[in-house]
Image 1: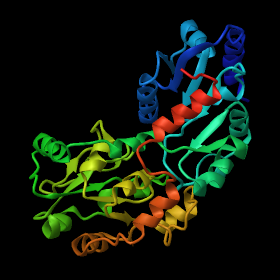
Image 2: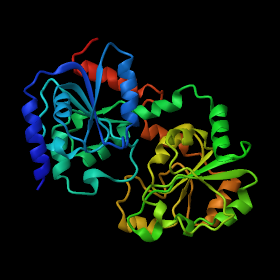
Image 3: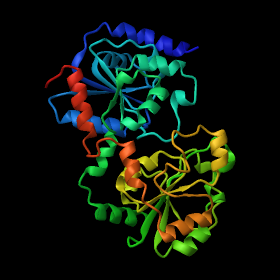
Image 4: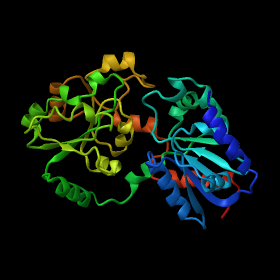
Length: 361
């Protein structure tokens, strides 16, 4: 078991005999740059300091040079799981920091739902895990099987995006022009997640597009942001005239959130990030009983702890949009999920890393 990861680490561990470069920062990514936005913000913050060099170690593209640069890095950042880390032995001079790609805590993950052995080994070789609030600390301790002393509440780097001086009107105008949308209409972004039970992945079996457009199209336009695995379940099931805008391939997800007036989701953690914008969130949970019984479950009470109303069918969803979704729980929800809400997460994380690394440059 874990043989390939052990072989990987044996080769890597030989290279850690080389001296550490105190100004080398490595980011462990995949060739698709999945979940890379946190890492990008951390890099930008390092670039504001004295000279650092940056190395991207691709998990699925190995070379002697990439191994060497990783083994000699002072600062190593991850944004997702990297199983060989369970057997890799970085020098004591190096700092391995897990940022994790999702904000706060919503759906259970990691050791909360699966075998904890490998995750515990990984955490033993991780120096610090960065989280967004004290409230989520116990959830992350369990999920990563990590010592609580390694968990630091410093924020989510990608959340800094929402505190920058964006020209929202210009962004909306550019987007509307690209997709031929009336800029005077409000944008409803629907971002459903993937279900293991494939019966429920065709969202258009549950969202009545014709009724949606009949009731709401004078004031709203519907955007769809679908999980890549979901697309195959609906491609041939949309009738002509049932209008929506498919933004599943739109590169900048954060920009979509920024220009949207309302978010519709179900079990996706995207809602935690959107909550920072203090805009309505509606939870369209047409398969809630099945999801609760057969999927991975939640850290929160789905029916009572969410920052917006839960609806179970298309008509309820349309009525909720028409009447205006309740936002009364948003502020308290954001306070639980995020500690300091100031757009300075990247700065805090880099300051912390430099301090722990003894680098005062």
